[in-house]
Length: 309
Image 1 (cartoon, rainbow, N blue to C red):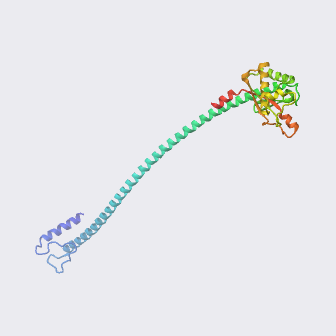
Image 2 (image 1 turned 90 degrees about the vertical axis):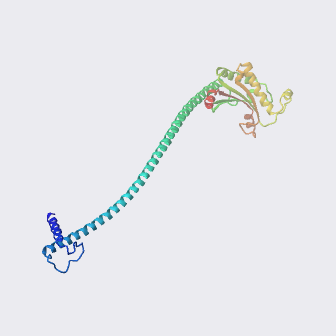
Image 3 (image 1 turned 180 degrees about the vertical axis):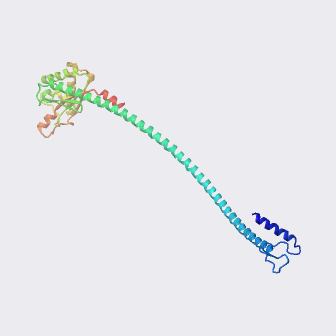
């Protein structure tokens, strides 16, 4: 570096001593063809040094231009990257906000579902409890019907199967009494053997006051006719409807008046010929259809209350 400074200083001193010559040779100027008194090795060395410096300057300028272009390119790239970064940042924020919003919606929906499930589980538990209570009540009713059935069978064991039958169905006890046990043909007056059967039934009924008692009269499909010597019956009975109703009523009066069954427990109804238990085409079937059915049902107030609630 010091050698270069010495050379440049000598060149400057030499040029000051040659006023008639061209004062400065710029980069790229040709070397003078003619030789002067000052033209010598030293001047030639200086000019060569000048050319070398000029070349370096050109190279540096080219490097500077290249650096400027690279700087501009890098700047443009940086600006583009910053714009892309801003866009990505905005998109990230948007997606992040969206995710947060979706998460909030999901959590809200999840809580709602959880609340619904909890409510359904509570409702199911309540229904299971109610169902158990209903099953317990039905079991009690069935147990009461079984006990009642056993008591009635025991009370009526002195009667034949063609006179009466005792069955249990759907928590009810059915006592089917044939008309030959209770009534003379076409009559609405209960005979003595019928009284005995009703008394045995009434004893059971009075010991089981928590029951409902329904007395149903049934006939066959043969139209009612007044038999000779029983003309008084024709005054009251016109057809099978009347006959079935009046026979049921006669039995209810015996149960309540003579054997003190609570009238609030008993009611009578006539079914006529329309609920046969056998085929009316045969005498055997018609005989089975001429009957009175006493249906005893343990009261189901507890069951009904559970169903209503």
